[in-house]
Length: 234
Image (cartoon, rainbow, N blue to C red; front, side, top):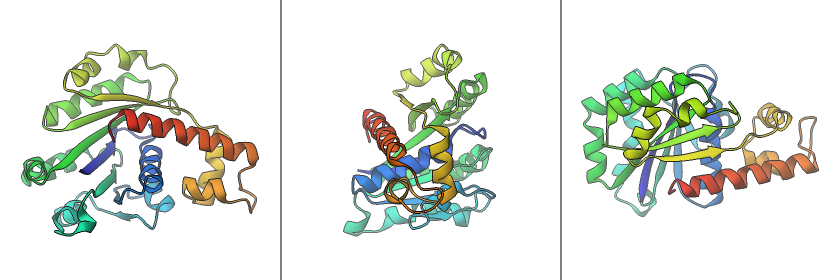
């Protein structure tokens, strides 16, 4: 099964790039082929940590966005089971929606047996619920939704959990998963290395190298995230 994964949430600071990076590591560790795209003009976090897999795409240009789905056209074994991850920067929902509509993309990908997942990464704020509602207003039941409760960006999700937007998403078949928080110091060291999660776990040299128990905590964190991803049907 091929899949196109838009990892978003529309607002900044909810952990979209962390989820994209974890998803990339999941595919690597499970030997599933994938290509990544980073839409962030300034930080490019996804591309920084997974440079061998991710490239930059400009959301304002259809020519750039078209590259996202170019691999699905390949009539080769390499395209079979291909997965694409798009790390969406904040406030990119409108240009992405316009591109999808003008290209009739969802119809095309359905014909090509490509599963489209919209990952909505949320913190504990009401605006995350409101933005989930806007996402569903745009795409309705024409795509799959994965709502991510990111404990690294909030501990109280009662506003989202009791919202009409989440109930509506569940009625549309959305999967709701929770990803745990990684200890701040460990994440800071990983970011300072500009390293993938695998590299950070295996690197033992340098001032920002993780210690024995830090490496173990990252392994446990990834294991719990992978379990959540499996629950989402990946």
